[in-house]
Structures are given as C-alpha cells and as structure tokens.
Length: 181
Image (cartoon, rainbow, N blue to C red; front, side, top):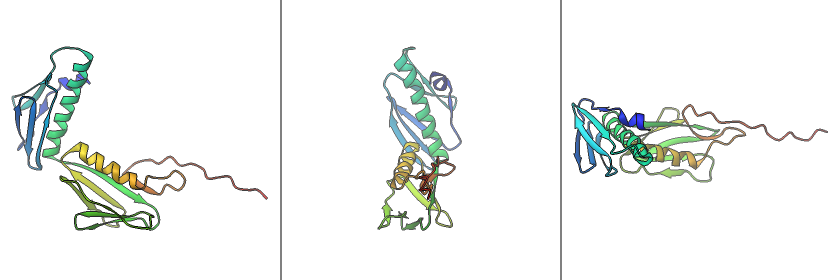
C-alpha cells in the first residue's frame, strides 16, 4: 500500500478540506464527511493537494500510510461525485419498489421486506422494478447497505434467483441427475 500512500490527492473544484490534529473534514457539493486518522500519519494540504506522509518505514506505518491515503481519496470523491452501487433482482415475481424513502422488496418470502435507508443513503428503483441503486457520499456505508440488501436473498447457484450486484457472475451448479427408469 505504500506506493498508493505516496501519491498526492488532487482537490476537485468546489471541495474544501480542513485538517485539525489528524481529524479531517471534507466539504463538497454533495455533502460533508469527517474522520479521525492515525496520530502517526501527518496529513498536509499543499498546492491544492492532500499529502500524507509516514514517520518511518515500519510495516505498520507503511500499511497505515496507504490506508489513510485511500480513505482520504474516497472522502474527496464522495463529496464531489458520490458513490453508487446498482443491484438487480432475478426471479419470477421478484420486484423492488419505493414507499416514500423505504425500499420494499418482494423476493419470495411470505411478506415484503422493508429496508429503511440510514442517514446519508438514498435508494432509487429503476423502471421495470428489476434493479435499484444505493447512493451516498460515504463509500463504506454505500457498500455496507448494498451488502445487507443482497444478504436478504443471495443469488442461489441452481436457478440463479436472488439479489445480485450489477454485472455479478453467479456460479451455476447442475441439479441432481434424477432417476433413470
């Protein structure tokens, strides 16, 4: 990760960063994110770029260097562009719809599954009710919410039914051979 850590993070137009004792706040057109980082890492703002430096070449410092830089880059991208994950529903009668802010999934259970969005997350159902998007400025939160939704009905390997990420390949298995008469 140390090679990633050495790269400076360019600041897009309209993004402001404030750094106080390794607590970084990033504001942009999409919103605001703040996070505390490891005390050993030094974070500086020079020439409209964020630069992360480490005190030594120890294994821990190298790992924290790359992690800190990657998290900061995700914060900057989040407040300037945002993050989104698209999920698709495969199965007869399976569908997704919105009721206000709540995502309602009909995925083969005796009841519809209702999912409330956490603060900072929005859901958008595409036409046809077969795919929907999880959007937000925090990459970790978007991924976590998308994974929890996928866990409601994971794609099964025999028919491929369930909720999957857009473009996800489900490894299919052959069914049982059956009886030969």
